[in-house]
Image (cartoon, rainbow, N blue to C red; front, side, top):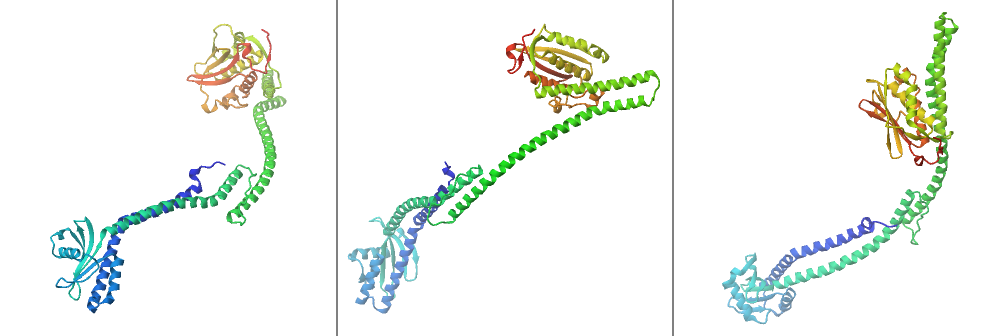
Amino acid sequence: MKRDKKGSLTRELAVILVGLVAGTIMLCWFINTSFLEKYYMLNKQDSLIDGYDVINGASETGELNSSGFDVTFDNLCANGNIAVMIISSNRAIVRSSVNDNQVILMEFMNILFGDDRNQTEILQRSDNYVIQKQTDTRLSSEYMVLYGTLSNGNLILMRTAVESIRESAKISNQFLVYVGVLAIAISAIVTVFVSKRITTPISELTDISKRMTELDFDAKYVSKGHRKNEIDELGEHFNRLSCALESTISELKSANNELKQDIEKKTEIDEMRKEFLSNVSHELKTPLALIQGYAEGLQECINDDAQSRDFYCEVIMDEADKMNQMVKKLLTLNQLEFGNEVVPMERFNLTELIHGIINSSSILLEQNDISVTFDESGPMDAWGDEFKVEEVVTNYLSNAIHHAEFDKKIRIWYTRKDSVVRVSVFNTGKQIPEEDLDNVWIKFYKVDKARTREYGGSGIGLSIVKAIMESFHRECGVLNHEDGVEFWFELDTEKTGIGSGQAEDDTV
């Protein structure tokens, strides 16, 4: 499996450990560069003071001129890289560690009485000696010089070169850089090697766990070493967990699929049963109550006159007819939804069909004082089941009549685009709420239940329209306008535009 190396544990460990080594070495180099020379100077200053104390002690005990002090004196000068000269009060050289006594003597005198003392820097001063840093203008070299008097009155001059101190510090820093680079390289190699031994099994376990989350249980951890450690033990537990999960999930999937199918079937059946019983009982409740009420009235002879009996019979017949119409619509809708009926496709005159429906509805239009305008742009032929298209237009027109308000105008028109004609039925009145626009096609759904009951609507008409248009493989819809509502549907105007799977008939 390919990994993002930027976020790998091996890289992080290597960067951290190499960074620590490099940081430590850089810190040491900075400290050496900044303070090593000063530390050497202080250490050399202490060496001069220690040498002075040794020589001054020998002068107090009278051993300064003895041969027994020679070894001590030589070791002091050689080990400390110090030039020493002791002079008596009459300028006689008592002891000296250099061969050219006259040169060092002249420098000694120059220090004590010369004019270039302004080129010196006093480092330390006491009652018996002074330590200063002096520049040799002739050699362009710096020295650390201790001069003063001993307990026996002799003068002492001790000098050591500062340049050697700087050289030692420079060499030390260079060596530290070389060692540091080597240490960083070795630490990087060792870190990568060691971290890979740790992170490789962890990465393998990570891959296994990821595959387990994706329900892939084929991957198993294999121990790499003879001696098992904590990671190997964790890998064995991963293997056992993988087997247990695979078995359990397989059983759960089988049981879940069966349960899901059973629940879906039961839920679907229950919902269909509840919806059907609720809607049908709601629609039949009122006409049945009216029939029962008026039938009881007839039985009990509440009104004996013939006119009243005729009125009772008309109500009973009217309500029975409503129930009969609703049952027929339900049967029609059932056939359309389950596709039990073959839809014959034929070419017919759409203009004549709309005129015929308007004429058959003229009495109802006059009773409701509604005006209808049919904007026809000439004869229009379309393909479809003429009787079902007639039912669609009738439903739209009936719906428009029952909901026409304000100016009480209905307008019917059609527009053609390419091989499709759209028929629109518009009525002035209240708009349909936006949240109900998609619901008007649902069986028994009523936007205004009180008004629908007033004119005897069942809420099935638009559902039948939707089912018919789906059987044609064409679209239908509803649009709100500022002064009313428009319902529309589309038909093919050419035989080539008819959807596949539909029966075709060339009858004109």
